[in-house]
Length: 282
Image (cartoon, rainbow, N blue to C red; front, side):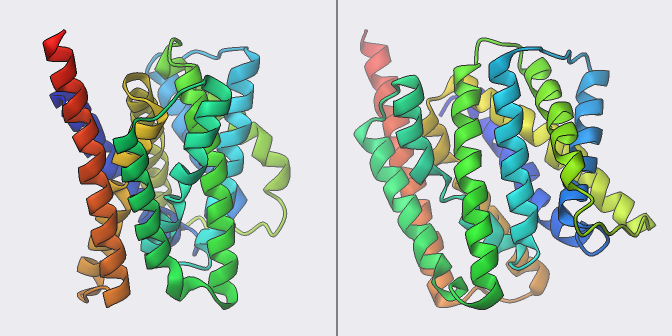
């Protein structure tokens, strides 16, 4: 794997994984939609301060709507499931991203990418079996809905790869905040404590502005299928982090799911090595 891509994916894995925990803790003090409004406003403001500009373009507006929908469903689902479970369920995303990439971009995946994603998805499914009841089922369904919209905006990142990533993300976040604002008063709740502010800043900056920007960079360099398969590193890291925080090992079924996901990542990387070898012979 190229050094630049490895560095981006490593940073994305850490920042993305931490976001599940920042959001879960912040939800103790804020209603879900309003939390995302604040996250987007702060993250977009940070990127604007770094030089991002507003892009008045239809595809960027669609990107903002898809992203806002994804994050809203993610936060709603996170009220009922753990950060690790939310992370794993979110990675049903490749199941949607590959057909969407073909329909919207005409982008075909290699056999290694497809096999890697299939194994990753199987691992997610195995992990998710204990969640399929009660309110945890509601949380799981909301999180899978988030995965569909995440897949959709992932494809749009790839579609807009020729645009300036900083400006795309600035517009995406600020516009998304405005789109969600009218909905944020439903079930409104806010306790502006010091702890909430710290969680919010963690969610908005390293796990908001930084994470969206990194994912956009990945999609500039890699196909939707390959990026989706490699990103299974996030739920694996999230589960490991939660286990370390709780000082307990995951149940056996979850460990099996993690092992299958790791196998999917290894196989998808086989595709990267094969492509590199092919390029070197040209």
